[in-house]
Length: 125
Image 1 (cartoon, rainbow, N blue to C red):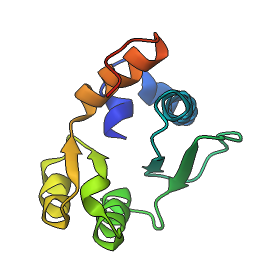
Image 2 (cartoon, rainbow, N blue to C red):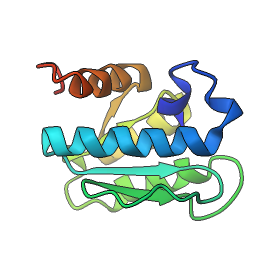
Image 3 (cartoon, rainbow, N blue to C red):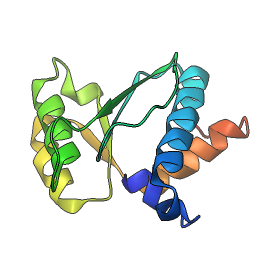
């Protein structure tokens, strides 16, 4: 949700639409870069349509930091966490993930890479 919130485009008025738009952008990004992309959203599941290049998940429970807990658990369970990039602007989540060996990228930085990929730019990595 940090990536959704990194662009003040009124997403809060249509949270479900914002989730669907980000899933679509991530799908295009994954297809363009060949990167494996998994997104874990907070909140109740919403239909995001079929995505061929991105795995869309919703937090396994409701409540505060639910998706953060799932992200931290996924990083801790990864066979090669040094190959993971966790996108977040949440300092608490970053502190939880760093010891696993996963890298952290800020939501704003990642948003710029998403936009570059959508424009066919060279700076998607």
